[in-house]
Every structure is written in C-alpha cells, then in structure tokens.
Image 1 (spheres, one colour):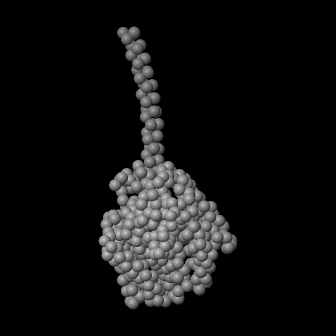
Image 2: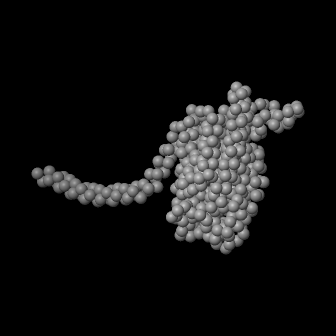
Length: 477
C-alpha cells in the first residue's frame, strides 16, 4: 500500500505542478491572444481597406497581367499630384486679392506653361526612343516630383522664385508619366479585356485616389502651408518603388514602331507627291485623327473652364457661398461627371466609338450654348459635369479607335503622341481662360466656340467615313 501511495503521491505532486504550469502558460497565452486581437483591431483600418483595394484592382485577371499594379500606381500618382495642386493653388491663387492673383497666375502660366508647350511635343518622341526603360521613366517621373515637392516647400516658406521652375518641372514630370502610362496599358491587358475597359479601370483608380487625397490635402493645408508638399514627397517616393513592381514586359518593345499622327500619306506629303520610302512610316487613319481633334477640343475646354471659372467664381461666387466653396462645387461636379463617363465607357466597351464621340461632344456644345444664353450658377455647374462626362467617355472612345484602327506595332507610339497633343490642347485652353475678361456669358460663348470647332471636324470625318463605306484604315508606306 505504501509502495502504491508513493507513485500516487508523486503523480499527485507532479500533477499539481503540471496544473500550475498549465495555468501560467494558459494565462500567458491569453495575454498573447489579447495582444494579437488588439493588434488586429489597430491594423484593421489600414489592412482592411488595403485588402479591399487590392481585391478590386486585381479582379478579372488584372492581378495576373500586371494591370492591377498599374491601377494602384496611377492612384498614387493622382494623390501626389492633387497634394501639390492644393498647395500651389493656396499659394498662387487664394492668398492674395483677385487682381493680384490674376497677375500671379498669368506669371505662373508664362513661366511654366509656355516652356511646357515647347517641351510637350518632345516628350512623346523622346519616350519612343526609350521603350526599354518605361518602368525607369515612370519611377524617374515620380522621384523627380518628390524632390521638386521639397524645393517648392522651401520656396513657399521663403517666397523664392524657385517656385516657378520647380512647378514647371512638376508639370513636365507629370505629363511624362501620363504619356508613358498610356503607352504601358496595351502591354498589360488581361485576357478578354478591351483597351477601353483597361483604361477606364486605370482612370477610375486615379479619380478615387484624388477624391480621397483632395480633402486630406485641404486639411493639411489648414494646419500648415507646407504639409501637403511633404505629403506629396512621401507619396511620390512610394510611387517610385511601385513603378519597379510592374512586370518586366512593360519594358519590352518587341514588334513596335513609330506612329505619325496624320490621316493618310496625302496629308503628309501632298496629293501630287510620291510617298516617301521610309522604313517604319505608319499613319493612324481618318477615324483616329478626327477623334483626336474632338478630344483636343474637350481637353482645351477643360483647361479653359478651370482657369476662367476659378477667377469668375472668386469675383462672383455662387449665391450664399464663399469663393473657395463655389469653385469646389464646380470641381466636384466635373469630377462626378468624369467618373460617370468612365463608368459608362467601360459598360459601352468599344461600340460605335465614332458615334459616341460625336454624340457626347454635341451634348457639351448644347450645354455651353445654353449656359451662354441663360448664364447662371446652376448651368455653369451642369456644364462642368457634362464636360467632365464627355471628356472621359470621348477619351475612352479614342482609345478604342486606336485599338481598332492602328496596327499593333505602332499602337504604343500612337498613344504616346496623342497624349502629348491632348496635353498641349489643355495648355492652350488654360491660356485663353486666363486672358479672357471675367464676363460669364462671354466666357461660355468662347467655351461653345471651342467645342463647336472639334464637333464639326469630327462630324465631317464621320460623314466622310460613311460615304466611303467605313473608317479609313491606316496605310503602311
């Protein structure tokens, strides 16, 4: 019995110790579990939206093809740009009386936009010569803007003239990124994805990021003038690293050539001259050139409305609102219209893009004429929304036409050069808006004239194409 008790007692003692150890281990485990739960709760506001964004951007094969990473990169690009835009707008526009602000913006345009009109035609051809460095070019555009944001922050604090060349550098880097991005999209199409659908995804990503970053930038601006610029610095640094996360096929130029933005050989060399025998000479077709003209008119209208309404609404704000709120309402209306146009473009895919372009430009023309005749705050906001809708839908239709009519080996070049032309049109519209007298009906009349020029050109091209039995296909010399 005693021998039996001894192991029993030993077991009992050991069991007792085991129970106490298990209790301590269980307590430690519970603490660790609680800490992990708290960690998950703290990380959830970041990881939750991040997972949702990644799931949305990588849907329908976009993750496998690399398009999802481009969508995320374009969102970062939009967020950084809006940070710098808010900081510059407050410094150049809202901080001084209207007359002085007009002079400042005119000086800003003269120093930044005028050189850009000279540099813009060079951007596309230059990037055509760097097809193997597209990821590096996008990363360089991001890194350049990160550094320039710091320079601008110093200029804002000291009032230095460094602000203007730095702003020019930001503008050039931003447009260079846009040109490369347009050239990259065709390389990242998922299976069964049309080019217009892919571009609509990328554009929506940028719009959503801008919608989030805009209020954040305004909040930072209220705390300190330089904080949005510091935010832009961080965002563009992130974009620099994200650029290199794109697939290596982005840098491939296999089978590509250079596109010339002319309707046919007669436009290039005259009706009575023999075609010049140049290796790799390509033309993009009548449908594309007329669609590009319509898009240029809408982009010109966009630049015009931004600058003209900025000063008009500052001098004559909407009833009961401040100048900043009035301008914000018009910008929001344009943004909502742009987002709706992008969504409708993805839904329509590439159905009758010529008809879509002619139709949406006609709607903008009607809205501009109505705003000129019955000028008022509501009609101006409606014009901004319709113009944003039309610009998005017309650009997607132009993408569809390039995909349909331009040979694959020159399609990337056509995107690069067309994007450069559209940016120049925006600059021209901005210049008109800054020099025009602050008369509402006069401004809307000029807006209608800008749109009418593009609409008539596109309508004439569509009728010509119908008479010849379809869109004129590009020729190869």
